[in-house]
Length: 210
Ligand SMILES: [Zn+2]
Ligand SMILES: [Zn+2]
Image (cartoon, rainbow, N blue to C red; front, side):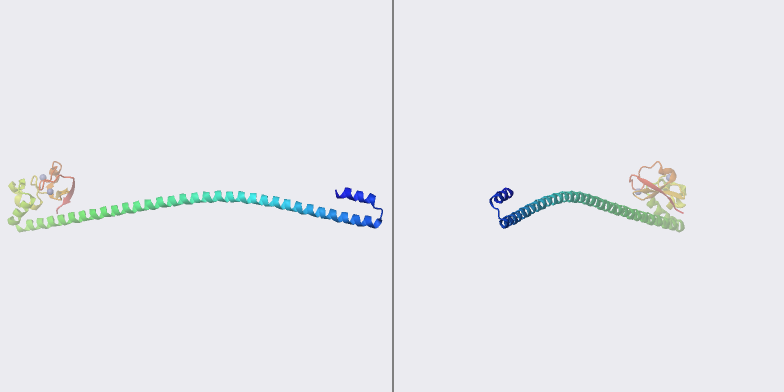
């Protein structure tokens, strides 16, 4: 548009100075036009770059969010695992306490058995040394209905006699749970109840008296 105008003016004006002035003016207009176009182009490029940067940022953001959610999931899994392990530890501690309690109870039972055995030994020794009066006493300890009273061996080591058959032996059997040291090895197999207190026999221990 500016060019066609200058052509028109060239035809109308013969003056050199006027032409020069016109050309200068047109040059300035063209420069102005180019400058404006350049600025527009720069603006468009800037906008485009901005949009691209925004897109890249959005992509990175979504990627970061994904990574963060993955990490969070891993962390919650680790926490769960940790809680499970703590639970297991608590259970094992409780089991350990139970075992310790059982061990203490067993120790107490062993202690009681040892005491009982010691008492029986002492009574047997006293009975053996002191004669018939003590022998009668031991007879009642073994149980009044025992056959031992009617046997001739009554005076010999009555304390270690079997409450079932009256025999004397080095080995006698202690019944559990009542803890009566009550019969000989031969009678033990046939007895389901303690001959002294009639408690059902659950277990037995062979005891050496002397
Ligand atoms: Zn017996
Ligand atoms: Zn008993």
